[in-house]
Length: 525
Image 1 (cartoon, helix red, strand yellow):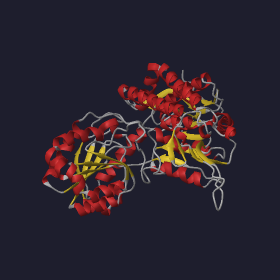
Image 2: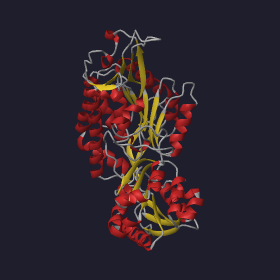
Image 3: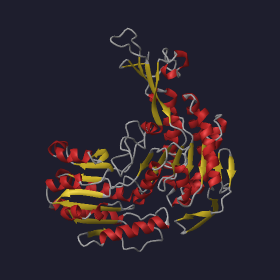
């Protein structure tokens, strides 16, 4: 049952004066549940509990944290079809998407459970003493990663499970030893409450301290601002727009004690089509990319919004094929009327530019909140001159840029903002022949794909989901995969410390059996 209240530690609370409802974009009507926005008093209470919980939770063993994370997966699974129905009702996304995303969320939690139980993620490094070294003796110095403290996670609009309440940010922060306060996304507050209740049940069953997790409601920006400004919050995780992520980043930087904001923001994910791809697999790529552009109604951060090629008859033919394939696909409901309105406005602003040609679009005869797919084309010279053409259109939209030659293609890539992904379609030989293009693309993205589509982000240790600004606020870190845990820790060193007082990860006997760097050599001894 949805209460509409904030979950603060083990308690439900609704002391605020402001309430709101979520929206069903398929039915084009408000959902019946009412939610109460967190008051400043409730925000303080959640942060104080998180800060107190940190004193205990920071020292929890890898085994205990793994037990907690696995317990969360069991409680989420126990919510069954009710959770899926709430997800669909608040997002307009289909049941299959909900079930798939729930599975991904569970697998993320299990991956972090395995990581912290094994223990080597702390990157323990030991340099033993050399007391008789001349001219000066060498001290014993040992280093490992330790958690930062309470973390605020902002739920995303487009992934109500995988990038929200129990998503990757929460899973990685809890794995690192940081209590989490989630600022639930107002579009799916019911989904967030249900998942949050599962996390609280798991925390209690696993014997975690009260305050290790809280879930706060908010329909605007005020709750998020107060959380980021609170002196006891030590880091922030965000997935959303450039405007929102940058505002949080600036707010955190202005604090008396600045804190890191790990924001995943906008990306148009450029795709470079080399000549052989158009000569050999034009039909195949048109089909695949129509599906990729329309996947999830284009509401993915890895949506291929920009396709770059060198002018040719083959590129012109591909453009027409892609447009035809794209507009033949079924339309889907966007997440919310506001998102649908922004998509329509943004795509119209692009297509109304004098130099832009609309290749294909639906005629607009669709249900409320259902998106019209659109493909446009522009000359490379116009794209270079008009920065308005570089911005992300969140929805089933893509732009083909026809470059006059390889030099113009290179110039365009060099002038792009930072992106999450870049894709190259072509042959093995072309990768070498167009090495300057590949090098330039590498400098602009966090992940480069060969002969594939950018949509689809595998959760694994080698995944990089981030990139140069504004794709993310810190290109050194990933938001997906087990290395995401590195965002919530800092390196800490002990010098000449008694062995028995060291954390087990750094003790001589290596009681946990983890991999460590000992005097410059990897060892489990």
